[in-house]
Image: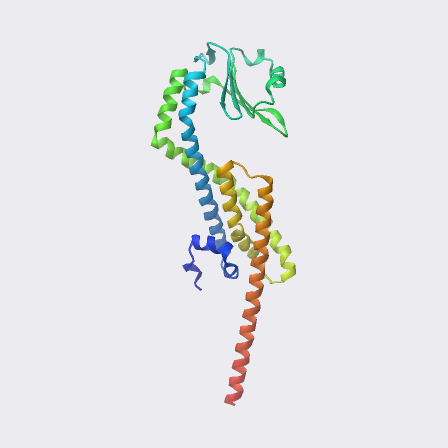
Length: 295
């Protein structure tokens, strides 16, 4: 079989439907397997970026309505935030923004943490002199993520914020830009994550091969891991798109599926090697018999 005739999507399907693909890919170059892996991760990242971008722009109209109807009137004047009233607004599930006409130094943050620290997962504290972002994590608790001064913002008041977001939500260029930006961000992180998984699968393949003794090199285990990770990566992508996270049980199932496919792949390579050896010996015996008959 000419491996050049096997396209990317055919390789993807065969990686979890036909074990005969593995004896073929181990004979190919490492770069060919790595290129398949890069394309696999890229396709999954593009799917995630598309749905993330769609979700972002679908949520913008409701955000604009919330800014218009629930945010207090505010204005950035001489690098200071001026609000007509202190007010808390729930932006979304688990997210709160607190407008206060108080400087950070005069605000009792410790008391605020005790009273409100367990209610939300993300807090935007709009102080008079700075915007601070806090996260509430089960492991590390209530913690400041970053802060930014009001002089860094280009908008100056509530009306300008509304105008900016309305224009942004309907701009094709903005959608394309956000899709490209999100794609790059996801790929830069997810590709590293998946390569670490592939490395772990390669080590697992090397350990399992002590049972089969196929004689494969470590780079061949990498080639197997590139293809074995296809179905788990695809399933993980679906999970991220649907629920924005991967449950611990799903991670366990992913490892289990990958381990089963490693076993199947090594078994296929071993059987192929045995059949090739038998065929070679049969050919040699046939040639010897032909030479004997000729004599």
